[in-house]
Amino acid sequence: MCMLLSFTISSTPPGPTFRLTCAAVAISGATVAVRSRPWTSALSIHCDEHPFVPEVERAVDSLYSEFRAVDNLVACNSARVLKAFKNARVGFHHFGGSTGYGHEESGGREALDEAFAEIFGAESAIVRGQFFSGTHAITCALFAFLRPGDELLAVAGVPYDTLEEVIGIRDSNGLGSLRDFGIDYREVPLAEDGGLDWDALKIALKPQTKCALIQRSCGYSWRRSLSVEEIGRAIEIIKLQNPHCLVMVDNCYGEFTDRIEPPMVGADLIAGSFIKNPGGTIAPCGGYVAGKKKWVAAAAARLSAPGLGIDCGSTSGDIMRLFFQGLFLAPQMVGEAVKGSLLIAEVMADRGYEVQPGCGAPRNDVVQAVKLGSRERLLAFCEAVQRNSPVSSFTKPIAGATPGYASEVIFADGTFIDGSTSELSCDGPLREPYAVFFGGDEFVPEPVKFYNQSTIFDQPFGAFNPPTKKGKSPSVFLVDIEADVRDAE
Image (cartoon, rainbow, N blue to C red; front, side):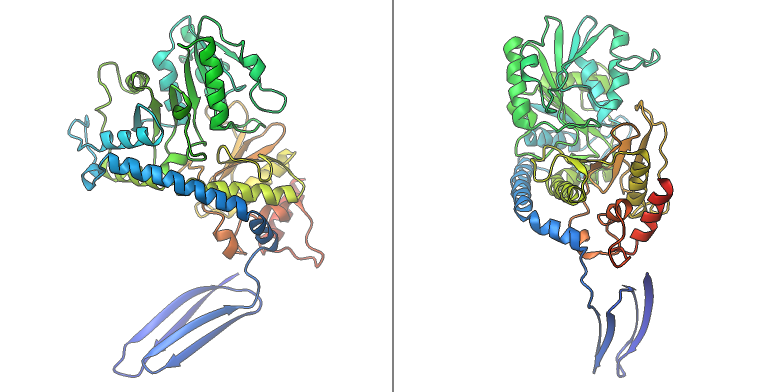
């Protein structure tokens, strides 16, 4: 419960009169004191109650070494980003944007592409707001080099749901999938441990295999995500079979979770969304393709048209500044998201839930999966997240058909950027094993220490566990969530 307190504080004339309005959380044991002395007045609020959720506090303490490792990762990646910005000579004039064809653009596109390419170890890059999503960027890349009679080989099992109609795994109703254009598709199933099947990969390529697609993140599959080191090993195996086979990496959710990126270990192309990791939670739109110059130019031609090149397409000035600023902040934002995923895994595993990746396991993307086991619990969990989000907390997420997905999906994303999974958000398909996928949690680790009444981390505890021995939940929100889940079950 929050009370609005209003005070009028007057000083001795001729001093001014101030009206102070403040909000205070009503917590048992809280005291308010006003101290006055000539010409000055001060208000202090003291809370006797411990401000932390005890279970979360213990988890944070246990993750000290992991959090320090993340801080070191952030420092390394931030230094690389800063160096790239300096080398690209990023200046205020690059934030100006353009209109119409974009021919009078003041160099922002070129500087952003140059910085991005250096950061990711690529020959070239194209970062554009005209990419609708990561799926759109990946699609432009695939259609750039695959031709009728070629074969696309997915070496990390089934691709992400939204690529199924692009490839033709699901019928696109004649809208132009790769299969519609006579491009074949095969996949190498994952090994029993959820990783790449190295033995199968060694004999997987055929003469017509033009491209090997590696998905870095787990997507909606219950498997661990791939490290850049594993991706590099896979590339070596692929190139030994056919040096001319193009290796493309779906890099979504993996950017800045390691000190190196796929192009640094031999990937020909990477593609992904700019509103995820690389946009630093503030890029409002866009996607990217980076890698070998020849193939980046081909992907750009699919985004625009053959012959137009990459020096066209307008972008407003306010967006250009956010692109640069978001990319600069991205390592730090991703680091906070990784800390959030570590914390979620620790707390939910302690409650008896199966998590992927496991507690303390290396993080190769920002996705943390928790197996909830039932449709009702998945719905209740997402509702709890939405109810405690900064945006649209008053709405209730509804599962339903979503373009690009075969199954019903529920999304809890009370985020400032629609679809920005580096902010606190979660989602999941309504199918076995009914797992919820956290995509980020960038704003969580610090607030969770201070806002006992509003943090999401104690929500699932009450939702999936009985109240404490005293009959009270550790947070005022738990009773409401417990009731939701009891009603659902």
